[in-house]
Image 1 (cartoon, rainbow, N blue to C red):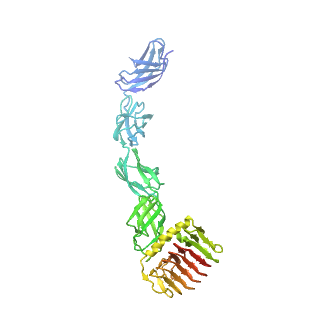
Image 2: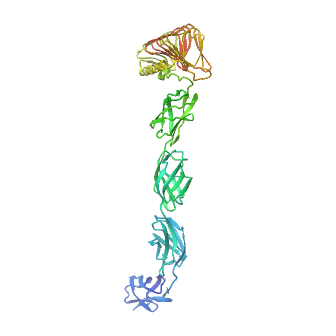
Image 3: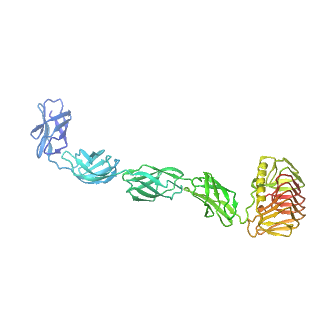
Amino acid sequence: MSPVITSLTPSFGPPAGFNSVVITGSGFANVGPLTVRFGTTATTFTIDSNTQITAIVPPGTGTVNVTVQVLLDGTSNPLPYIYGGAVPTLTSINPASGSAAGGATVVLTGTNLTGATAVSFGGTPATSFTVNSSTQITAVTPAHSAGAVSVTVTTAVGTSNGVAFTYIAVPTLTGVSPSSGAPSGGAVVVLTGTGLTGATGVSFGGTPATLFTVNSDTQITVLTPAHSAGTVSITVTTAGGTSNGVAFTYIVVPTLTGVTPSSGPPSGGAVVVLTGTGLTGATGVSFGGTPATLFTVNSDTQITVLTPAHSAGTVSVTVTTPGGTSNGVTYTYVSGLAPVNLGTAATFAVLGAATVTNTGATAITGNLGVSPGTAVTGFPPGTVTGGAIHAGDAVAAQARTDLQTAYTDAAGRTPTATVTTDLGGQTLTSGVYHAVAGIGLNGTVTLDGQGNPNAVFIFQAGTTLITGASSVVSLINGATANNVFWQVGSSATLGTNTNFAGSILAFTSVTVTGGTTANGDILALNGAITLDTNTITAV
């Protein structure tokens, strides 16, 4: 049976010949002597299998028939082979640029592309390519150094003209300034690097920045997007690919939980301690909009600050870090005098050192305690509401320690006036009133706050405080009992049915006689407290 030819690949080639053609068909193997002819010219060949021969094309012109002749079985059918087929041409490539890392899919258009055996990008073979038709090839770009290269297609007839393809360098990042900001975003940062021209995206830990400007090939200005606290990687994407990452830290917004002490003079200069979280890196501390010029960040949870001068009143204290501005905590600028800080002793309506003894139906609102002594008697019939009895326990011990501090503070205040006569019948404004000996009250003393709810009254008795029967401490125009302090050098006695206001800080003992009402704390640093059918309310 004669051999059969079904196809020639390629079916055309240059007149100079010596290119390879694959002949596909059947009846090629084990049939005895065999001859392959292009027209009348026999050529060299290799029998690859019974269905394939690879032949070397001899020189020629025009169109000739290719045949395979078997000596005993005859000659195959002919198939035409064309000498001098058209050289391929390229007219465009789309897209015309891509990453130097390669891997981009491009479409080449032109003519005579059938049978393409190679696609070259500046001498580097395409990673892969597919001939879609005689006018189109799809290719995958190989990696190549940045710059413009010539893309060519080769067929059996020859190599095409070149079309330009630009390899764009993969962008790199070398820095970001500043390198931290608030989780709320909105910070302006500058990225530096190379190959940033044409940036199409900037990412902060996977979150895209919605606003950025490419200033140059080496710089981008970007507005940070919102992101949870922590360190993220910033990358830039261009047609050349995605850059390496540089670190940016979203710093937690600071919070404040307290300020100690919580009040001070309008002149400023008081040392206060702020507590909270996220305080590291604080750049500013504000008191009602007035910046503190001196502060120290002790830790992530504490700042020590010198208060700035400010008008009297309550203000909001805030801390600013790269993470943002904290919530506010209140601080009161007290006009004239700062109150005496009683500490935990302020929760005690009655606090004695040796004993607390009661007779009758005394009503205590607040804590009742004794320390270092342990004896509390007369409860019942006396009652304690809004607090508890602390007889020689740790709570009472701490309160006595705080009382010692408060007593020292009150005794050390600089007097603004001297008391030389009985207080009865007098009207006094905020100040420190000092008596070398004792202070007496027979009648009514009026304490005038003059419209200032923070007005402070401090009385310093060198020896005793004694009130006569039915005496009164009257508070007007904003004066409050929690800002009235009676520092007594020895002991205090409140006469029968006295209506008293303010906290007594007695060095020795306090006696509260029958029917007396006290709107304030009764505190004895070293002695006993004696009660008799009284009403005492902690302030």
